[in-house]
Image (cartoon, rainbow, N blue to C red; front, side, top):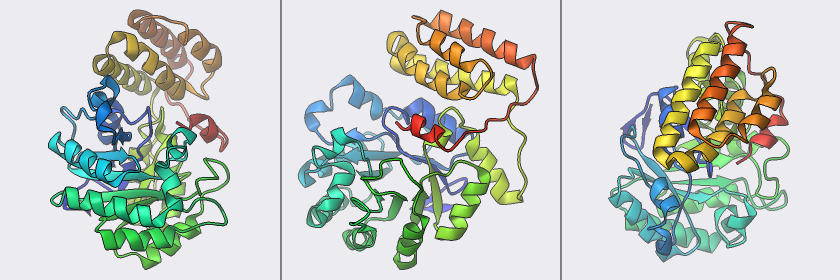
Length: 342
């Protein structure tokens, strides 16, 4: 797929998720079949550029191109500076966050809260586009503020006028959070009016659902978030299904074990041993959700204090699973996604 001047493996993108889409996760998803991965949001507050968290989020060492960095904020001049700052540090695409529904983001009039102020939306988009004229700028939004205020079409027009190169849409309003069903009809309506690529996001949990969303929205690409937590091979499963109409076999126990351990090693190296152990816990929980005996296993893993014990516990759990079957089926109920929200 050609996208903003880059040749991508496919049209399956990793959604930016706070606390999840760090460099290890992005690299893993690309290895497992994602065509593009967007970073977790980076603050536009220059006072925080030197913080360990912000520096980690801007770390792209060894990452497969193109590197897409999402920035968040509500002051046009600060957003423009954030764009320049991240381009200087390797960003090849700048994505603007106007889709996050989290209260701590919306309470400072950033994220999806910006959808309530269309003039400010225009000012931010123009400032960022003008700040990095050689770098494509994309935008992520929701369908609107609430069910009575769906203004995605208006935002599309503002975005196109400002020079935004692609628009990703989560098919819910800010007020909906992650509840209810995604509004694919709204994404379809925006796609019908768009002159730029439209990326559909929301509730894409299986190969069949991916095909359905592409068909009903006409979107140019899909963005997958929570469903890939602990299941990064979802990208290759969707890619294969879209190309052939057939399903890949579920991953073998040994492969899941191997992928998880490699992911954790990257986390330990990226965050350091102490923070890495804490970050690893949520990923261990996601990888094992729905497996036999996993509830007790997760509870025990959350108490283990160091890398050695984490590795040992994972080995014991997966060696036990390997005795019960060669392949594992990961079947998630719809309400599982609520628990997976970042």
